[in-house]
Length: 116
Length: 193
Image 1 (cartoon, rainbow over the protein chains, first blue to last red):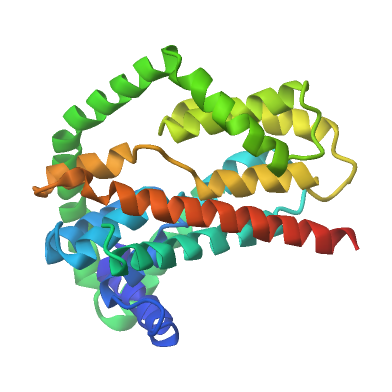
Image 2 (cartoon, each protein chain N blue to C red):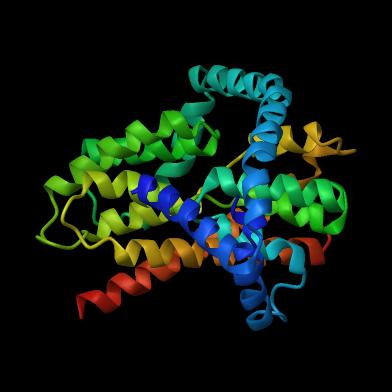
């Protein structure tokens, strides 16, 4: 639903135009945006991308790498946050998002140095 | 919290769909994506069962002990202030070992126990303690030995070498893991001031 409504493309375009030099492949941006938010949506999007560009293409490999290496931040925070009521979980959340971003970047680096 | 996120997703799709004139596509995609998901699930069941089984067996062998021995010195650096004999420490180690095997479902209860025990020693009333932040941070960075689900997906989609991404996955999880520990340590230092 999300992807066909165009909002993902909209957000992704914005993100891509800011980070054009860091994220080399435009195709992976929707995945990178959704990965920390929802695991199943990210999986659906990842599969969609891989079907479109081919699993063994460069983009396909980066996509698989991101899906394998990162974790659904919001999910982790929601689970542990539910145990820690009335606590400020914002710092943990920000750290989690930074982790996901580093993950995406290092996956691209992994492709560039040729280990995937 | 997850419920809110889903509601938000659905609402925003509809609103944005109306706004951009794509509402028909939104409507159709509800049904086509259900179909896609079901087909994919059926295709994946075999692979997922296989890997879960393998990892379940690994849990009962000495691999887990070895993993724990490998994690312990690491944890001494990461959680330098935590009592080594406490059950929170034990649970954190177990949680990390299980996570490394890719058994997220088995790791979560262990993690919840660890957080509960960490909470007992939390000196702050409305903030997370240092250990809690660190624990959640490493959980979001997720160190994994074999990314089973993505290997299954790749073979389902007809990849020539589904496992070829494993080096890249190791590379980027390790980078993310190490940098997240450093960032969290820096954050905690700044917070104390």
